[in-house]
Length: 469
Ligand code: ZN
Ligand code: MG
Image (cartoon, rainbow, N blue to C red):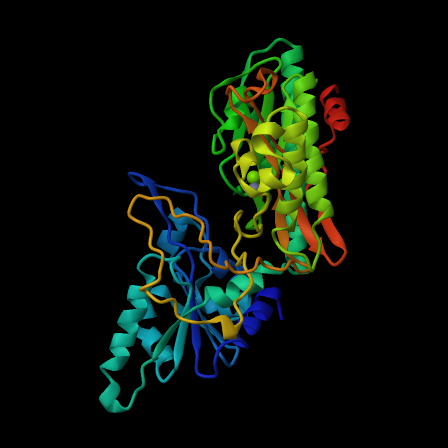
């Protein structure tokens, strides 16, 4: 059995005895006029099939059998668009029991759904797909007088698949390590290019550094970026969702690069912040050292058995104390570390969270909270429900929010503290316009984490050293 067959078996074993799961891949999407975006398969579908062609749908039943609908062989189309596996080859190549042309799905789907109990599919991920399922069920309902039973229940397949994808298997970890290696090389290349270009008095812009990254991704076989690269020089680093743009990279700037490649469908996600010319100034060094110290504390706090929020909490302690020490917050106004954390005073400089899941998607699927215990499941009375008005910001609910997820061996999350200092009366001017983030990818183990993205260093000395060569 290949890994995809194994995963389909694990999905199947979690269905009810009369159930069917249906997982479509992603559609092709038009970019403009008759040009498409580069095709990217659906992550759930790929996780279960390893199949990368568009126009495909997977059916899995409780007996562990799979049926694939895929593009039919078509020499004419293949001359234009490339090779298609086709339904004849699919059973052999993918280990599915049967395969049909996607054009026949409306004909066959009702037959596979006849006399089943529940249909599982991913909710809210494929626009219009629920309509198709409804049509198939309606077709079956019309045959009720002939004694055919239509499924009675629709269930969210994400609830099973998210849990499966949250724990990475050995195959996935290896790909993610390889993806991180490529991304690390790219970060090193961009750092070295920056320092070298400035030594040679060349004028460079953010997009030059992006180009160095992309070159390195692609030449090692990565098929794409995992997300839009951020290459932010100087004050731009304080814009959290900045992209790589045209701003000049100037002598004395800090440069923040948040970029990672995708390899065989898996994301890497690395951020490094470095001085453009390879030498940190005093204030840059102070602020960077604080973010690094926060990251070290987060890493030390992360292992199987602790809460998902443990790295964030560890990070906030260090950052809050550091913000006091550096004069970015002051005790008279903001109190001590506990007050700063409780009242979120740190949020003036640190406005995002420390971690997210990482996998096939850069913000990977998986719940961040524990499943509620069955006893705690009660209907919220609509009389008491705290509604927020249109256009208002939902206030964090004060009634008991669900407990954060407990980390387990095999999960992969990012650890990415940062500090972003915009010019303001309350911040010492020496720190104005500095934006720093250090992000690594952490594989959770029983006794700690393995950082799989550390082939690009984070220590000040190590960065200065590699940029001097
Ligand atoms: Zn991230
Ligand atoms: Mg990132």
